[in-house]
Image (cartoon, rainbow, N blue to C red; front, side):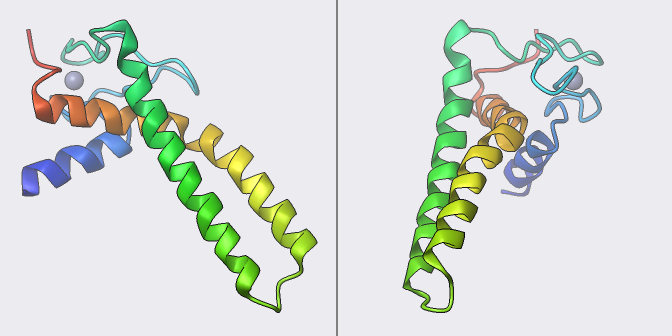
Length: 117
Ligand SMILES: [Zn+2]
């Protein structure tokens, strides 16, 4: 259990789950194909990006639903709430993109889909 949490936290911090030193991304949106330190392949198949997109979508949906529940608080103006939740649902997935892909990479590593050659 501790190993699982450690790997997921490393992945959220965009650090290679295998060597714990290599960075997963070369810039804001470009993921390394291989870890620059240990050489493990982060994306073995072309469709692996969809897992990160699903994590990102679910997290964004949670924010939208959480924001929508604030509509039941009478002290919050509806217009301000709509603007705030709308801005959050646009900005959050952009910011969270790398972390969701990193988290998915960690999950793949835990399940054995990413392995050291
Ligand atoms: Zn590595």
